[in-house]
Image (cartoon, rainbow, N blue to C red; front, side):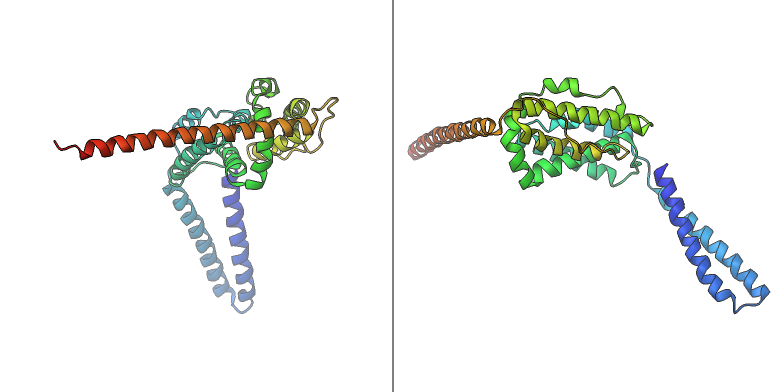
Length: 276
């Protein structure tokens, strides 16, 4: 519907511009010439509109089953599921997004999908998730500090989900009310366990994703009151120890891997030197 409205709007603008030019020119024409000019102008406007219609009709509509299958493969069916996907490990997340969004981009390049379509909006949310966690180094650096803590709350976040199909509700006030309630729920849970700063970082991701999924603007800027938030220093200390422990484990694994490959290489050289 929005696409059609935009097309009509552009056609009207083109017609108005054409009529304005003709009005300036018509002052120099007699009645017969003026009627002929107006007739030609009308024909030109209709031709331009017909050309746009033909161009639009020549592009087939997307098969929603193809898009649905791709989204289901990565378990994306709701705005909340896009947020939950952000709790995957960084490499696994970016790899999935690159594969799925790459396929969808190629498919959507050859067919029409209305921007108000539910699947189109979910894809917009995935693009934002991809941008923030796979390409925005500044944001990811902040998110990574609280990732392990937030990840532990995965099951807790289930009660923050909105009612079924809440984002498809036509009443914008209801949509915004549900959206605000969801964001506050996420915020309080993260602040209580992972600090206020962690909640603010996670909220930025949630708002960025959901704003690109829903059809209406909502004000969710006000943060709810949290009575006993976790001190940020405690979270940073624990995260630092986990990261340091992870580095040591990785180095130990790489050392063992190097020894194994070296041994195999020596065995290969020995056997290749033995005459058959």
